[in-house]
Image (cartoon, rainbow, N blue to C red; front, side):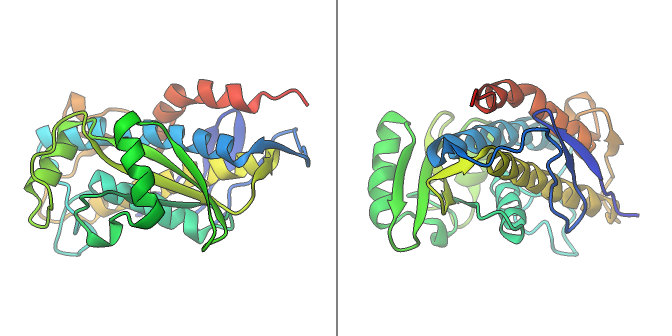
Length: 269
């Protein structure tokens, strides 16, 4: 039986999630005026992403590997019993967002990518040079795509990131170290400002994307035939051959990131 999580809580707003469905805001606040700049909103969702990816990379991939769990770029193939690597976890989130009605774009790029398609070019390459020097976000309007764009530093924060990129057969750089600037996450949105409702929808679309890819991983585990299946519940890989449910995983993200997000959302109009 596939695992599906219907109801989740995010930043004090009830979000109804169903496979293929759209998050529905149930907040009493229904402001219609634009009160957040696109830069503010993209910074909020980027911080949520930093917390989520760090937790997945360290607590799931890093600790999971020590328990014998496998993670592979071909994890979706029928003959591969593994979970998604951190970069593919992010790609799964981006795919979910792209399928939603929320016009939020997300992708990961670098000057030394494993996949040549992710190499920064043109203006983004120039701005990435600045990011490597000061690690500060860069904002610009992409005239070709007509999209407001924000780039945020992506740092090698865990040993799993470093070893994977250094050892990959297609790597273009094999001397990555912890703390190196490996790339940048790029976010895009068509409007220069958003209402409260639109802002919550952006954050919820990211949260739903996180749940979608994580649940896909748990469903993949259900189909394992040769590998030992970790027990899925309230425990984490640090405690043994365990994985948290999607609800437990997202709840941990929320506990770490919700305070900063709420500070931005608590706007006096």
